[in-house]
Length: 341
Length: 140
Image 1: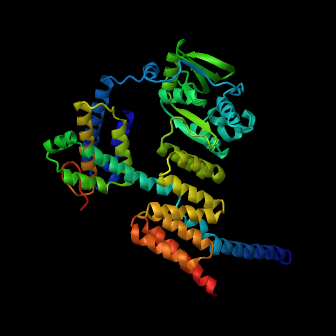
Image 2 (image 1 turned 135 degrees about the vertical axis):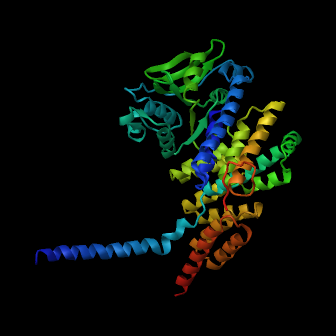
Image 3 (image 1 turned 90 degrees about the vertical axis):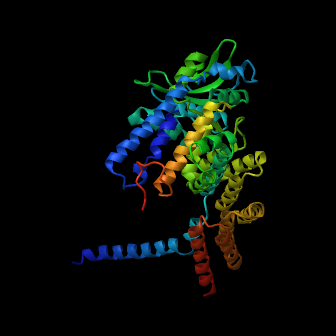
């Protein structure tokens, strides 16, 4: 419910509107805090136990499971981030070592690696970085054969000792989790201790997967947004593969279709991009994005009149992004003008 | 004076080169990528719509409606206001509702209803559509 509190602050009227006087500001803040806190306390008192064991009991997963053949790199001082990411990347077939990854992930001043750096590095290597934030999801991924990077706090909340490990298996009969951690290959850690140390990072977990492999627990929104991360790293080829993976599972996903078309475009495969955007228009005739992007694809092929028709359609049907469409329209006209000289 | 001349020449050449190269970038090719709408932009727009739909489906539940009506809130009006939430606001509210424990007990219904009341009304109060929260100063 901490997230709930943050939400209350986010919608703080004082942030949204300047004309609120100071007195009202404090009153509002106080009221927000009271409402937020009471909800927080209520939930704290009600049964909000999410212990690993309980989630496990409801699952239909084998009692013990271990992924065989996951490579191991012993870490050097403070360098658990590069070591763990190297294990995950090598497992996906990428040839890296902790040494080659260190410049991308390790921040010497912090004596550690930030989560964002781990995610970014995985994407720069053309891999899907997919967040895992619950124990039951992690166990399911393990049984699907996907190792999971986890961030643990081995110290206290007030004196943290952050540490990345790679979960590769578990044994529920013995209440153990199996980790590649620090200098230890196949470290066995009691599940209870693991849950505590992992819980202190807010259950931060990460799957690193090649773009043709879908997470066992994948949901459409989460998976598609992790592909958008690949696009941001400009790994168009891998993003394209991942969009195809996504569309195999969720053929009607609108955003994945747009992404597929965009990737073809950035890979300069204008013919395929054109086909994709045309099929999106056929399936989602009331959304402007595909018209706009198809107009751009046609424009790049010198088909000025067809491009202009499409962008006029976009302007007609979709009011939300009309400014962007107008810009595209202007550009088409400018280029059409140039071509006639 | 003569020693400066070659320097000037170099500067001039660099200047001309820069003008040409910048012109090259901004003319036909440079615009190319700018006009594509990114997957991310398409995604946030469609997420906003999905979130609004989700909130509306919560609002459609009779037990939630009962609570809202008990507090004197018009369901039609609430629905209209959900439509006026921005994408970011709608996604945050929908996520908030989703992270609540799912049980069908009366307690979580009350919490969901209060969330709806609080956010939908507070946010629109600020925009000046309503006057439910007297401590909020309106946009005039």
